[in-house]
Length: 365
Image (cartoon, rainbow, N blue to C red):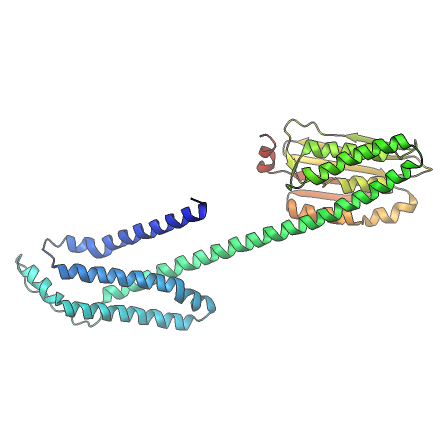
């Protein structure tokens, strides 16, 4: 039995139990305390009242509320409620007269020494009208709450699908961007050192395998993401000369937490793109650290005059999309800053992620 059918059975059973409780408390318990032998016709009448209330409840829930109240036809809705209460009272009164219940009830009370009960002058059953209004009020409230919950779940599902589609689109933009740049680097290397280009192709193959198979679930272990970054750095170092110093400091991974893949690469890629000079000395520093539930990344690279404007604007497809991914995946749980320092002439990217318990615990299994 699947979850949907199970919930349906539970809902039906719950409705049956609630109606049984309602019928016993309001329709059947009080007559049983009268200390008289109630005629069978009385129970027919009570059962008819219960059936009327059940019909009114579900007709209101499935027809009146969706077709009238939810479509801003409040006046018509109120008019129909009043008419339903009056009609139900008229039907019960008619059944009362047809079964000759007032006479039979009086006879039953007179047998135990209670004189004849005064005849009611009301042509309407006030008690039944109040019961009808109560049932309609409960039905309307339950229906509106269920509709609100259904709309909320639908909106959440649509938002989840939208975010999932957008993330897939953003990842599709980031990965080819990286792949295109890396292939250009290897192509340039083949003219200088064939053996190094073979090593580079091996690293690229391992990295692409990670992209194709290990990032499809939407999250990846931090250790694999770090290995991917190390491969990328080693690949980029193959084409650098002695004027560029590259340092990388990775986190001490005690518990392999889950993170969104490919978040850090565009910032590191930007450092290699704009922080390298063929004539001047340059430094690229990449640091990843983990402390409790906080994952921190710092990327520093030298800035040269010809790259100053690009660094200030900090543009590019990969970078823009990665910041958009941060907003979608870690809303309110990340801080990001990027800018150039005047004293050291460096461009510094600082990203902090606050990981929740799900990401932390999922990595400990």
